[in-house]
Amino acid sequence: MADHIFRYDPTLGRCTNFDLPRRGTEVRFISLDESRGQLEVLIPIYRTGQMGIMTIRSEADMAEARRVAQSANYMRRERNSRKRFFSP
Image 1 (cartoon, rainbow, N blue to C red):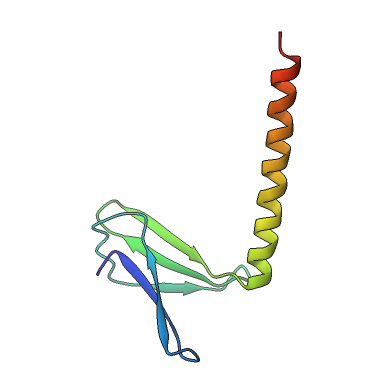
Image 2: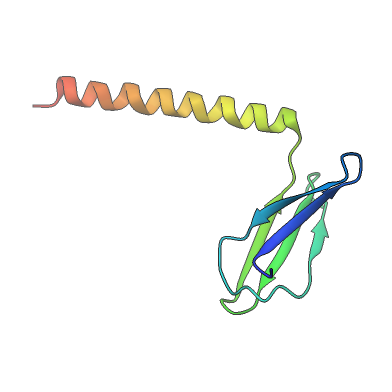
């Protein structure tokens, strides 16, 4: 399974599977980067010359991301409804 990354949780004794966005990635080396204050998993994708970056987020980070996404969706719906209503 070269097109997946697994995270092992020792407290639960189970793995979580994350699919990579490309098939045939040939992952050979995985690096961790904490230089920007947030843990990122760096995955070089050799066949396509790309770099996959997986950001590890806490539950609080995910809740904030959901709140921002919902707010953006609300603003987009409002903007689209005004366009329909006021466009000639």
